[in-house]
Image (cartoon, rainbow, N blue to C red):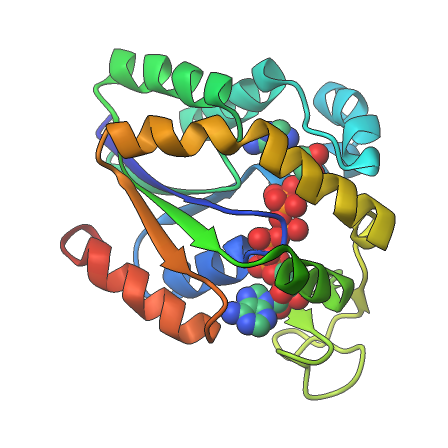
Length: 219
Ligand code: AP5
């Protein structure tokens, strides 16, 4: 199996999910969001979900070994050549090192890591206004990217809801955790020559096009 991957990293609210959806639409990358995998596990009351739920409610990180297991399990479901787009993974240096071990053993390569940069103020404003479709998962913002009809998904007509961890106190903890626990990652990927910093405070479509331009031959 021939595997390669890119990763989208950044503070909660940097726009990882939004940008990933835009890239997915215009490329053959398979979107793997650890946040989405965990939320599905919580919803399905699986063993992983039961382990992860309390961490997520507080806005803390789920233990590294649990994260590696769900990602490698997700990849193992596929056969043949695949290009993955990790969203919110790896999030700690330990996750990055474990991923490297797993990828090296399979001859797989993480060839670009995009760090989506926004200020904490922008992130807080974005997350406080985020609304998500219950049915298809499409992502909106009450002011920045509003649905055509209040509370209703443009894509499938489903009902929009606010994520449980998008309350201000939890958002602030998620931002704090990011700065404490993800910092070491960026120098690690910088040293490997794969880190690209992207200004994610711009219009999301501009950001998508810029990233696509940088991965064009493999998109
Ligand atoms: P996860 O679901 O990954 O959440 P997060 O990292 O906190 O990031 P978000 O999904 O909140 O933000 P985003 O950057 O995707 O922004 P979005 O595009 O939605 O993780 C949730 C939890 O799971 C974690 O707290 C942790 O407990 C656990 N977890 C997950 N991965 C883990 C890991 N690897 N290790 C350990 N634990 C893990 O955009 C936000 C809003 O802004 C939206 O409303 C959007 O419409 C709007 N917006 C986006 N882009 C723009 C733009 N350019 N202009 C204007 N508005 C925009």
